[in-house]
Every structure is written in C-alpha cells, then in structure tokens.
Length: 403
Image (tube, rainbow, N blue to C red; front, side, top):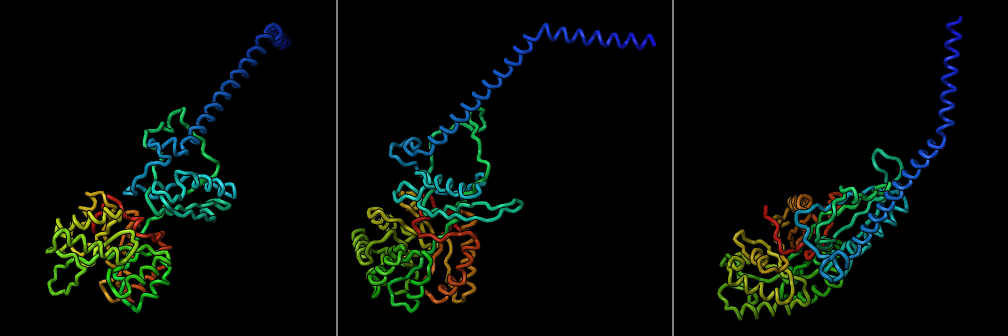
C-alpha cells in the first residue's frame, strides 16, 4: 500500500517538473516553431522561383529567332535520315489537351509553313480510349511532307540537372511522325486507256511525263490542275541495241552541247516540273560524262533527280548526291508483272520498307494491273500507318541503301 502511494507521488512530482520546464521554456519552444515555419516558407519560395525560370526557358526555346543560331528567323533543318519518326509526350485528355497540342504544333518550329526552311505537314487529331485507363485520350499525328526542323544547334542543359527539371502536365500527349511513301507513275504523255482512271485514283502520286509525245502537254497541265507533282521522264540510252531510239534520247555518243540542248528541249516540252527521273537509261546512267552533263542542267534549273535504277551499274544517284542535288533512288518497281497479286506484293514490300526506314520510293506505270493493285491496296496504306507523299518529300542529298 505504501509502495503504491510512493509511486503515485513520484509520478505526480515528475509531471509537475515537466509542467514547470514547459512554463520556463515556453518562449524558446515558440521561437523554434516560428523558425521552422520561416525555413519551410523560404524553401517553398525558392522552389517556386526555380520552376518559373524553367518554364521561361521552355517558352524561349519555342521562338525560332532565339534558337536558330543563323539569324534567319527559322530553325536549321536536317533530313529525316535514320532518326525516329515518333515522339511520345504525356497524355492530354479533353478539350484543353487539344488546344495545347494545337498551340505546340502551330509554333514556328513545328508548324506547316510554305517557306523552304520548314517541314510541311498535316496535323491529324483524334480521340479514343487508352487501354487500361478510363476516359478518352487525345492523339495528335503530325504527317510530315518535308524534313524535320532542328530547334537548336547548340548543346542544351540536361533536364536531369537539378536546375533543369521541367514539370510535366498531369495528362499525356502523343505526337507520331508517320512513315512516308512516294509513288512515281512513269510514262505519261501517251493516249493511255487507263489515264482517266489514274487521274481519279485519289493518291498524291508523282507523274513522270515523257517529252514530245502526243499527250505530253495536255496531260501535264491536267495533272498539275489536279494537284499532282509533275516531273520530266527523261529518255536515256538503254543497253539493248535493238530498242529504237528517237531524237529525244540522251545517248553516250552525243557531245556535251547536244546533250544540253536535248535536255532543255525536253524540259520546255513538258513545262513546269519539280524534278527529273530517267526513262530507260541502263547504259547512259553508267557513263560518268553523260551523267554529269545531265545533272549539271538539272542543278541549273533547281530541280531534284530520281535515279530510276534501271541498272545496278548506275552511278547517277551517287554523283547527284556528290553534287548536292536533292536525290532519291527507286527502291521497288511495282509492275514488272501483269498479275495484280504480284503488283500488290511489290506494294506491300514498299510499305514494309517505309515502316523500317521511315520513308521509301517506288515506281509504277500507267497500266491496268497497277491501277487495280493500287485501288485494292488503298486501305492497306492507312492500316500500315503509312502516308503517301510526292517524291519531293523523299529526296535528300543522302541516298538510301538498296535491297
């Protein structure tokens, strides 16, 4: 009994001591609490100022004159080459997301501009459910017609540095650059029975028009009116000596002056063109003297050149690249066969090439089997996520490899 009273008395004394200490040190405790609050406030303000500076840095990077480094007001540009053609950013949901992506892609760095310093393209916005999440997600597809612009040539501060952290939005945006595929349809200029069907096809193919044929001028004008890119299909000497050649062919026995004259006549016959590709030419495209003269005229007119690759011995594409002429090389002939299924197989091969490399170029002709195959493959282009573009969107000084 006495032991219990003693323990109770000791507890009471301890509590009294604690209360006495609190009363004596109340000022110090209040001071410590105030100090802690001030410290937390200062840290918060410092972090807020860092975030604001980061946002200002991002906004400045979207101004082309500030980042181009060339004083032209536009960012420098580089070809697509082997770089990825897909870009994934955080998901943006709802109308606010749509407005933000429009603002981002309408900035001078990514917008579709007519100037030569910008990559043309088409912005496609769509909404739909995202697997594993509720609600709808906005997806933006920027379909490029030209080369990808580079925002800045100077090295940038890493976002992994403490001062470089940029807060991401709460939702997610995905921007995807689709693989591009160019189709050149050769041999326009004749009174083909399939000409009208090709003109109503609804694909932005590039039309290669032969000079000096009965329908050359008429078809070239009609193709331009319908929005097709027109190029000169320049006749060049083949290896087969039994093929009858007219006076418009570029042959290896001509002197430099005559070669130039024939090219100028051919260009005048077709009218305004964006580029040139060779008709036949398995012999002429392997002759360096002839090739250089042809390319010099093409360069003087500011045109691009597509090597039809009628012979593996062709040096035309390589020399064009050395001369700095915008260039591409045919990668697939679509219609060596009259069977529609075989033509479709060639188109599928071209689609796979575009998916693998980001871009591809193939050549077909104004033939019934080619038309039927293209009509049947129209849904396949969309299914494969490949956009058909004019040949001028594919050409660059860097030549793709051959299969």
